[in-house]
Image (tube, rainbow, N blue to C red; front, side):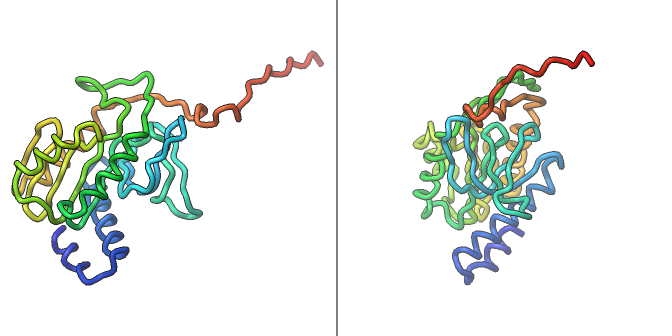
Length: 223
């Protein structure tokens, strides 16, 4: 199904192809992962003012506010870093577009999350860096190539690579699946990231800097 959508956009403009690919993957994932998680696109910022630039797909945690970037648009948003569970970058051919992936990853790596009072199911939360998954309709043809690329890009927060055409998926943590199970491997990884963090608190007021003032409340009236 994914490759059929890709084939149908081959003759379209670059902008049209990107929009169709991103929308389909968002719709696909949104119908597989738990319904409490929202998917959108836009920019991510942190309380220090770092910005990711436009990213294709944001998997959103439900415990922080986000802002629509356009009137009447619910999918294009400005995300607080603490609201981003993961980012998915979608390319037609990741082997030929890897420089674009690296640019996105480099910008995203500057954005840091600050989660407080968290509760998890197991292990440790993923930390301040937002995981990045890279999906290519076309790309490398072997697991060895994916492993080499993940090793070369350590530190950029690239958590997993998916090549749809050849049925390949691998994470930086060592999970690998092929063929019909490749998409299931990505779904499993995203499900772990989104559901392992059971609860957390963030501090949206910190994004306002010195714009908020704490004044002494007025005294209660004696009348």
